[in-house]
Length: 427
Image 1 (cartoon, one colour):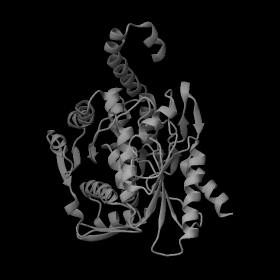
Image 2 (cartoon, helix red, strand yellow):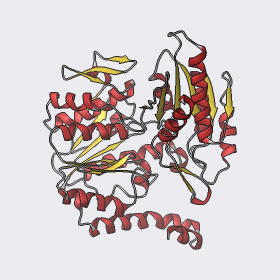
Image 3 (cartoon, one colour):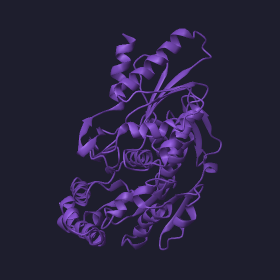
Image 4 (tube, one colour):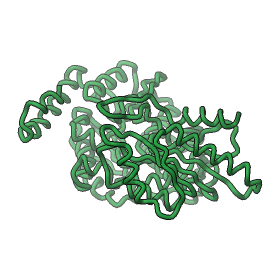
């Protein structure tokens, strides 16, 4: 419908009418499903990175505390014990989908709904008429610059979510903000809400280990098998929120200690191989660097695509530069070209690789298979235990499709493909 209107209405008029269109759809969805967010505690999570992991941590803690929850994230939609993968290729689906989801959560007797909220969702008013109780802000860094027009507009879209909390009719509203983030003060400037901050000092003493992290929260040691300092931040965000809900530190510890995997987020692929394989969603410069740094004392073979065609073109060279800095070998491959020539995307990335050997393999399965075979060859030819090798497959995480021209979709799973190719190699 919108695509048809775009063709027949003059561009200036179409752009002027678009916000009204999105607003009315949001209102209609809320009316149709009887404003369900008024009847359930809404915990919104926003930020450039860490939203999905933080949502999973929050959900795990709430469940451990005995609460029935709903969860809407890039990864999945969950109501009570019923969970299904998010196959929409968007974190916040359309207004009717979100309002229906919340109505189903209310009908199922859920006390909390944990929802990821995105800047692009804000532009289309998908956050409207979802009345917030809590907002957790993980961090802010440049992302979706081309679609928003500038970093300032991207930041403003994120701040709109905080303003929605400010305007919410709920009582006892709470905002939880990463104090170490450079934009923290802008979110903490909202009024009429209870403000809670967390920072890395709150986790001291902490240890980053080869097989996870140890950190301290509320004078209690928490040990997680999840990798990277970024996961300490995400767990701190969830734990800080949990304390506002009068959840005990022991319950928080048990929940975080017991969560051993978040699919598509530094997900370890194990098929009995003698090297490490990780699938990770990393799609920003910072998240890619942190993913590579999460595993130390290792050679890295990196399968690298980039943000989908037609968007964030500025990142292509920069992402490749990160791979050039950290990886021993790089395989550039296809990711989500949409209507753009995938070879053009890879050619632009190629300019960022100066020092390290690389090859271009456009078929993503072949690229993954080649990386795994290289790692197997490395292990076979290096008997020394001091020499380790890790394969990083980044960019898609749990994305269910490779998006091609004219809306075409190729069903896909980096994790499943990696398992299948490992099985062939190990045989």
